[in-house]
View 1 (cartoon, rainbow, N blue to C red):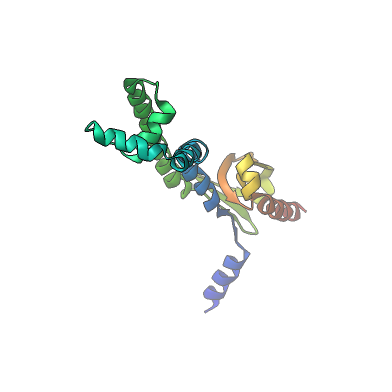
View 2 (cartoon, rainbow, N blue to C red; view 1 turned 90 degrees about the vertical axis):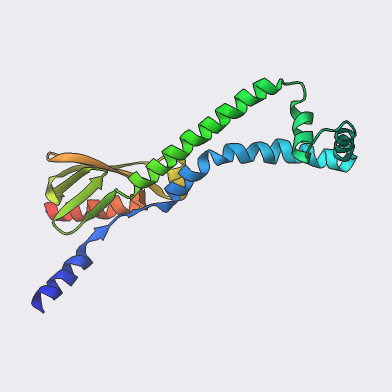
Length: 194
């Protein structure tokens, strides 16, 4: 009974950083946006213009008359990229597919790595884990605590917290509410030094 109360008390004293899911959303949406933006600003407006003017139906009818299979997408692509060689377009589409595959591999790896980040402290020490690196630093031994955040990090309130000490240093990425976390940690660390 006495040990249970100690465990509960120590759990209440532990402050853990939350790893940001928003950072994962940015990673997963970064490259698909390069596919969506051309559709929003090039393909869809051109499609609407051709649909209103009747050019799509006319081009589809011409394709049927000469015995070719054509879709609305083919007609709009032909209108946008008409003078570009099909071989060149095939090469471009291959590299776009390769880029998408590379991004997908990176995003999966980034997600797996993301869940290996941990950062928390209690009244005595800070514990950090970034990938395979783990460190425990007594609060009075902490030299510097600082934050790095990207444009997305500033907008979505996450960042990379780096803690340095004579025992070593660690950088934990994608900490949600990173500024508030380091302010609390700094306050506890300063009180501990006094």
